[in-house]
Image (cartoon, rainbow, N blue to C red; front, side, top):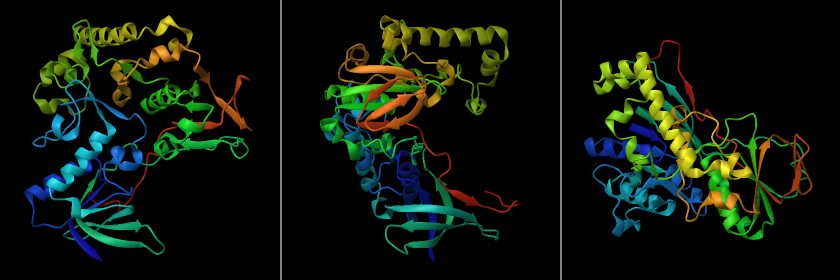
Length: 382
């Protein structure tokens, strides 16, 4: 059994950062980084770079401390949203220059982690690599989980998919199916996450008819904001880094910043909650006004159903080359709010009886919640 002082599971943003810091502070200790994909980068790995992929971030707000993402080196200009390819190149450069590239094991999935009830503790990991009989165990004194939220795609079974005749795939595999941008006549995009918005934009700008279906029993479209918001036209990414703005978000770790009294005022008094509600109302109304959702029946269906304070990671940015909302108003995109009832040869059927032709079905149906089995006894300390 191989033994490592530290094992990091996941080679995305957080996994690489953790591994880089471990190696920098303890260069003589052994390190292994396992990732199930064929390249590092997590969401930004080679196999995840679908056409037109960009970060919600503008240059200067998405980089590691001490390792700047310079315009000259990574081909991103000031005021531009960072492309997926630029982030991929940046993460590979970070792994190489931080000295952890040789510790990364790709196409390696950790199946389970079992805590050891011994004086020294540690973890026994069961890992699987490509090829028959490639399952083995390794020991880690320390274990860091950086498996992310978008690792294992969840693709449900749709009634009639066996006779649909067209291609059906999850948004995670858009890159592997990007040839459909040239071959498809009509595509159904199911879901209203940022992944779905990107897919709709990619297909319609390629000249493909898009039927956009938003599940009526779900959480609705994600928030899509312009890069600059509020009447003061503030850079929305930087709003989240302003201390005063962080006080408007309830957080169980809020006391860690030393401003307990201020947080208690904002979230524990009637006057404070009125101020907080007012802030989020101004921000939400500004986004609604700027996007002009009510100017067309189809864009009206894209209005968020949740309050902005409670959206979390579902707050995204309009980072497209052209105005996607204007494209929605055209004839190439039809938006439906309903439920997928079944598929038939070359058609998608909704529960309300609506049906339309489609030769591609792209499902943005979320992600599996559990990807690693942790084995511990009731008395173990993890």
